[in-house]
Image (cartoon, rainbow, N blue to C red; front, side):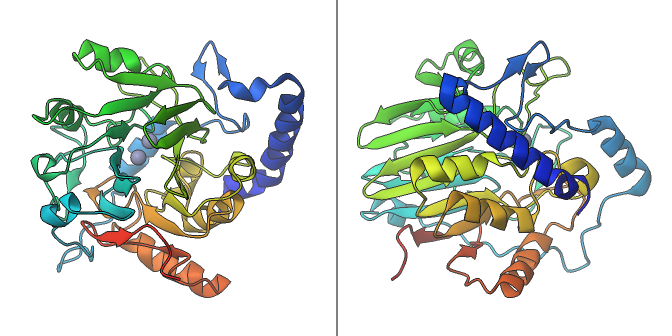
Length: 349
Ligand code: ZN
Ligand code: ZN
């Protein structure tokens, strides 16, 4: 663990200080912003050079796929089962794409169904896509965490919006509404941190994360990033989007009074000198679960596209098993699913 861990006490102190100030003037209602665009909740998080990391990859290489291929458990999703779903359920479609059935609604986080991230030269899909967009049940709400190609996939958004049974409403971070309007998609609402909306039986809130955004060479941090909290049917869930560790998760846990389920990224954590500022590793993912006061978590953002970062594509679940063993956790508390797998959202007990 390099920089983030040494910086942690300072960032926690700053986070607490900000929360204290915020409670007086309610500055927490808005994401911080300056001339360089949106900023993180922990101001100490200055992302190192992306290009230095790319240079290191170019000169040092990325982990090669082993002769037998990566070990990524995956299965075909059963479209008929999804269409007939009557109880709260979650399906991991791969990467950060999670389909949730809750209170009779189907909601989808960060949909990417494409074979490549940022075609034609981006990372490619490794296990096969478990279900096509056309096979999905009617999708009511789509939530986008931030403007990176692996979370906002243009082809997937266009196809979801153009479905014959009607497109979903898209909930997006501040600054992204224009991107949808430019593509003729008008059912879109944008959100600042802590802003909420009601969508039928669901209450949905956009919450902070420590990350960044960029789609082109000139739009760094011009659109906001974050996670989504969904409440309904007696359940409270969070999809954190992409994030580094931050004291803000303790604040989110406190404000909402804990979660039944958290979808937290556990992949794309290497090299730590760069990724520590934008993505958690598995130990930090578990710290976030604890900070959020989440009874259960599923690790996402791994095993789907390669190359995305410098750890082996199938390492995150092994790392999660090691962390669980070291901390005495059960798989029910923090687990991974097969790509394409559906599970009940409520705890079995
Ligand atoms: Zn990202
Ligand atoms: Zn990502």
